Length: 308
Ligand code: FAD
Figure (cartoon, rainbow, N blue to C red):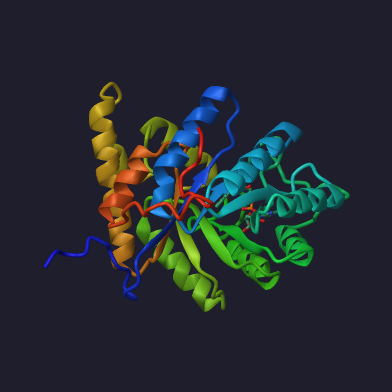
């Protein structure tokens, strides 16, 4: 009898995935994004999310991307939304715009201070004063699923991990349905975070954010800014491969596979991939954990984009 390739979570159900993309700035980046979506869509992710930046043009790009996802694919888009630089009325208008475009899931965030994470965050005077206020406003605005952030190794601006857990609890109490974590490489930090969150009475799913290391130097720099630790063993694995992209990709796939298989073996049943708008490594990892392309849902609701 053929063996079922689907890797099952500890509960016996298939592992589910979601993919994060960022809105493209140029026609070339747009083509790359839709190529990635076309490749990953047949894996039937639970949802795909699109990030959001401060400033009108990046907001419009997020809106345009989620609207196209609704129109041209059978994927369920989650639109990110931050409190930075916007009044509550402006945020309400963005939420209404998402609803009108057919979006039913929002990833609600505070956002980075405009001067960067080394500068204190000051909430806009006429805007939402906290992330939980944003969560509550979205929940009031309509029948939205709301995801929020979580930081297994603590947010860089947070004094302690407990402070972070309390912030997460406030977002849950305001109506958050799911948390998605900052990426991490040390699975034990994530598992400890789950324990502390459970002890604090947090019962929503806390989905691990997974980043395939496409470029070690870039990822390590980004990790430093976001508070994710870069273990020595990870640096050692990429050591000496700066000018050898082919081997780097093989190592990246092996490292990511090791991380996700360990998480699944420890009971994780949903993985959120930071795709950086590139499909191949993420697709390979998904294949490895048993996900297979599903046939398109039908002419009216194709799983793949109609055009790139
Ligand atoms: P919160 O959850 O509100 O706060 C994070 C932690 O910082 C809290 O736990 C608390 O301990 C601490 N903290 C917050 N405010 C204060 C304060 N005033 N004083 C002291 N401590 C404080 N950014 C974008 O711009 N666009 C995106 O699309 C985006 N998507 C993201 C998706 C995910 C899954 C994650 C994990 C992050 C994302 N970010 C995004 C980054 C995020 O905006 C930053 O990390 C930001 O600095 C904090 O926003 P938050 O919603 O995580 O904050």
